Length: 475
Picture (tube, rainbow, N blue to C red):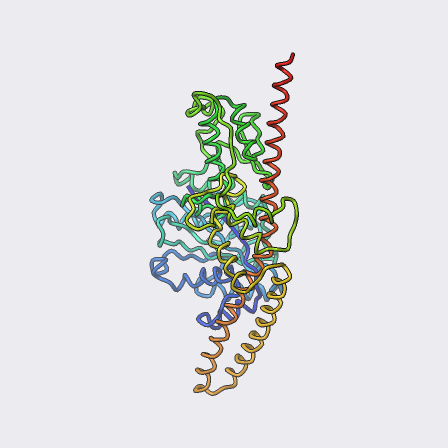
């Protein structure tokens, strides 16, 4: 079974040229650019690729692949925008050997991007059982590397964004993504490997890692609440009512039951949260803890919250008092007071428990720099931006001095420049915190508004049911 992905890398042609001229001293401006540099450095890293045995170049020479890509870009005058594409093809642990993994990677790369003309090169014609489709006509310079340093063997693809045949740029689309999946799956079947029969969109890697470690992600919160609803309800009607009282929007029609929270656009199927949660199996397992009746969902609130914060917060009322809003939210999440066993039961709050470290750092930042309102925050940001600009100019002057200085002076100047760089890094970290603080209060206010709106709606529904029961008794 192979999982594939592909993404673009933005940058300037000058960045690539600088890297070719001096790779040890070239600093990548973005993480994606660093990933690109890493792909080409794998050729020189024998510990990862078995002395270069599992590095293959298609339509170029692997020793000078990057230089050839640069020449192609210069030839057609396309040195802006996306400079390359980077992707991977990852296999289940112990499913393939290194040789087979690399062979599958080469075949996939050739069919996708490497061979496109009816009269293929000898490199493309060897042992090919399937001709590439007409969509693969533009041919690109590609590096394929197979990595053996993880439990799961995986291939990396890196190819030029500009075709060396006609200068056309590669355009990635949903159709191209599907073609990559289809080609990879077909080749896996040819090698008697498993494929994903029912693929679904995977969560982002941070969310996936948090889910794996059991942190309260959105999907883990869904699972907890659905499990409660199944155990405390004896019929689908009461199960749906339980989830609605929690604040979910439900859809229990059709073959797949679905739920979502109001802040998300798309529903999540219950059988994707747990493959056992089909309508038939849910009906069979309902009411484990509801032998004496259905239980209603409830939302608990933190104990020992100072009255000043209870009185100060007003639902549906925007505020500039961001520090007090943060403190109020920390009580709602159970961060304050310290040592409490309280954990929020509202699904609106559960996911934010993943961000405790980030939120605690922001509260610490506001307390240290005495930021109480949005005006204080903007003033602090303006000051930081001015300091960053000043330090950046100072670093530029030091760079120019280093070029003109004697070898003896250069070492002292480099140390001074490193100190300035460290200060810039710290200032940018503070600036990032500052900007994050401005964005978060909007989400905090929206979350609390949803909680209060859901509580009001539940109370109204309860009153309506009471009135309805009274009306039924009087008849």
